[in-house]
Image (cartoon, rainbow, N blue to C red; front, side, top):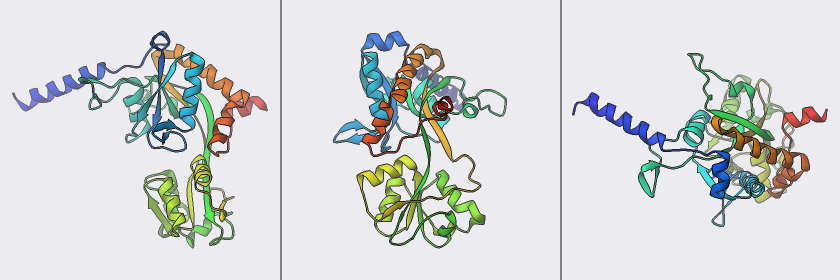
Length: 304
């Protein structure tokens, strides 16, 4: 077999395998008795395993969705790829040809019916590639349920206060590698904070660096900082009151995603999540994990 023919055969097999992955219509979900909710693996406080069972904010929301639909929750763990577009493709509308079903090596794992923690942003939803084609045309992003922002936590025994990022020219700060805080702290203010920025695999590891005295502060998502302070409290740790000049978008809303052809299921799920936000049940879920809750802009605009 020639190399060209071999490559063609491989691509054909990949295409056939991709066609075996599927998410489902509303009626299929109801008749099956379960719904697959996609959440990120090892991502506390949103989705993680605790005592061998799924836990976290997004898992709790998934449980409520399943309860309201009268079905059981089946957690679909997502391992993040290079970017969100890959995650949506691999878990919502197409699947990855290397992600095989353990019980049937010739088939791909089934997809999530609904994926949690997706940016609810019109600009992102309608983003186009270099040819002008919609990048995310196969998915619908809907149901905003939380507003997120960045937060600094610092050791008050080493720093009196944090009202400006300029202090990190003199005090080391921990950030997650390849994250927006990493880019910001190494490039803002003409790079004057670069030498004091230390990188860690994730927010929890950076927080451990704070506990061990390797850094004087940590910058991460507010929910991650809240969770770390809740689960590993230190009376000397305080929250920064600083802003982030020239950072761009510092607050964003999070919602869900579903394959565009399964909108009926999306409408049903959206109604459940909307009721949770309006009734205060959503805030209760966040408080369970020690998190401050902020409604998405959609609800704040209605209130005003």
